Length: 137
Image: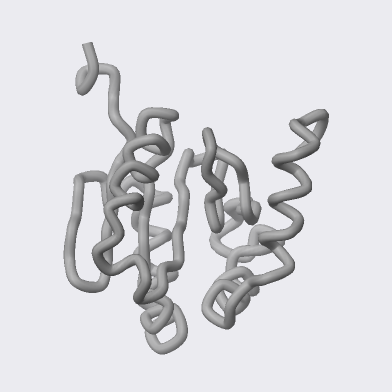
């Protein structure tokens, strides 16, 4: 984060130090443009939140959630904040990243390529596209 907020930069660095197994494994697939040439970064600040992974070129946030997120109402506000800031959000469960990584990566590619472009809520996936100008007057 060049020339950014020192406090947010420090917090992002701290968050990168405490990756869990699922985030670590997904990062090994996303880093260094390994996923179809798309550049991802970790722990990018968006508003008051930090995205697990973000692709600036596609305005896509990828979140890896543990069971504590199952019914957490704060996630809805987090998603809405990121959407309002122009970011689409895709969420996967830790277990799916660990056990179904190819499917997770294929789904991320579909979102990056624009093949996944409408709101999707399922047991193993949540995709919330950014609001377009026609969504908000």
